[in-house]
Amino acid sequence: MLDVRCQCEEDALTFTLRGEVTDETAPLLDSLLRAALTVDVPLVVVDISGLTEFAASGLPVLVSLSQRCRNAGRSLSMRGPTDGPFGLLQLAVD
Image (cartoon, rainbow, N blue to C red; front, side):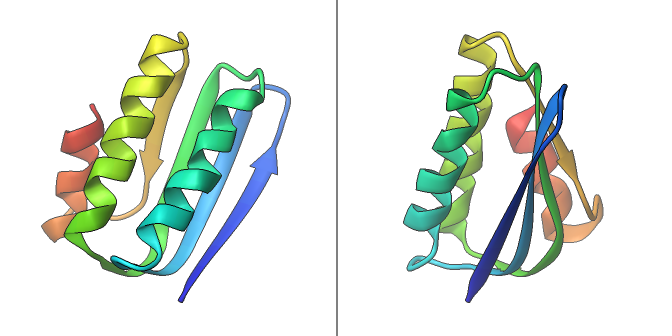
């Protein structure tokens, strides 16, 4: 199960992820994160601190978001664990 919360502020759109990104939930996550580009904010934040599992199918979702943000002139920031496998996510989107 994946829970995605979205908070929009004047200068940032924050997605807080809780639960599991799996082969089944990755397409839903992709759809929700694509919504980030419909809101005119300079910064998109993805908080992964609440994730308990992150399948390989989720990585292309975040890489794609990073590319779309860059193409739209927006910044992408990852929040959450920086050690172990979750640390690789930060490297993948930088």
